[in-house]
Each structure stands twice: as structure tokens, then as C-alpha cells.
Image (cartoon, rainbow, N blue to C red; front, side, top):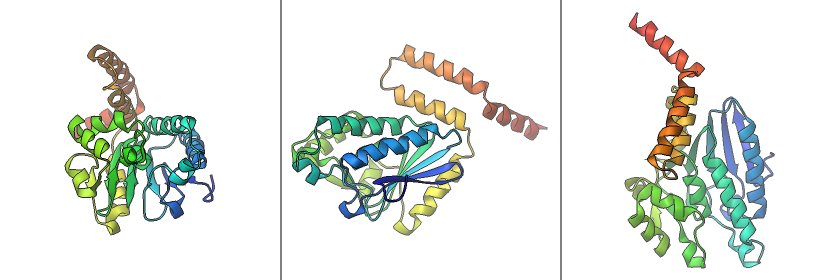
Length: 251
């Protein structure tokens, strides 16, 4: 998609950057952004050589969530909420490593997108939260994901009060993984990518699937799925190469 779209991709080799692109409204989400999000996900799912997806917002904010002007005008009904959360689920299930790079606001639907990523890195000025109840809304599938990240007690407080928390507070409770100075945000993201790409894409992809399912299945189902994916990992070229390198080091 082009840079005129409300969501677009920038690619360099096996790395893609997904950019939410409505900076004039802090990347608030309307119908067009939900649809463009799915178009970009189609492209990401079809890219067999993709290793990493960085998710970010154009301008000074990640995303301020739902477009309240569109909501107040009656443009966003229940089918929009379904479409949006289906997009977050698709993001969550990508085989590639996904990293949310957060500046400014990551609230409401913006935080839901960040929670759909594997890792989150934030600038010190970031503000995170699910203030939907203040607008007489349920905060999407944040009611499902947020307790799994930070525990039920903290999630209740954030959802029921609608409060926003700072990047450092988010770091302390495990809602983000790193907080770094604004001028180091891009460089730190790149160093995380370099470190992560040293590992096996096959093992990482299967591990993601297993972790995503770990809250949705009992132990026997999790064990069955784990053994299936472990067997496939053992047969992968990544594993064969890793073992060959190990044998070479031993010699």
C-alpha cells in the first residue's frame, strides 16, 4: 500500500514496518484504517521470507484508539468492532516476530494493537491505557488480553478506572518490555531485531503458537500441540544447521 493509505508497509529485506498513518488525529481508528489494516495483514501473511514486523504510528503517537468523531457520527457499529479485533488477532498470529514501537499515546484500540505484538518498546513520554469505559464502551478484547499480561487485579484497575499510566509504570508491571530515550528508540529496536534474528525462525514461530494457545487449552492439549511442533522443529533446516554448528564447535 502507498504512504497515502491509513496503514502502509515499508520493507527492507526480511523486515517490514507497519505504519498507522492518520497523524492528524493521533492515528485514531476509523473504518478505512480497519480495512487498510487487513489489506496490510494480507500482504504480511503472504510474505514467506518475513522475519520481523515493527508496528508503529506516524508522527508523535502510536495510536489514540477509536476515532470518537466517527463513533459520535454513528459511523462505527458493532461490525466495525468485530473487524478491528479480527485484525488484532491476525497480527497476534503472524509467524514473524512483531515489535510495537511506541511513542506518545497507546490507548484504547492503540494499546490493543500493541498487546497483539510479541514485544513492546516505549519512549519515556508514552501513555498507555484502556479508557473506553469513560466513553461508555467495553475496551474490546483488551478485557481478554490485558489480565494475561499484567494479572487480573491490575487489569481491573486499568479497565474500570480508565486511567492512563506512564511508560515507566507500564515497564514495572510488565505491560512493556523496554523504555528507552526517544533518540534511542529506533536504534534499540534495531539491536533487539539483530539479537533475535540470531535464533531459529522455525522454533520461534512454533513457540509463539504454543504460547498464544497456552491460556486457551488444558495441559493435555498443550502437551499434544507442543510435541507436534517440537517434532516439526527437529526436522527443520534451522535445527539441522544449529546442530551442525554445535558439532563444529565441539571439534
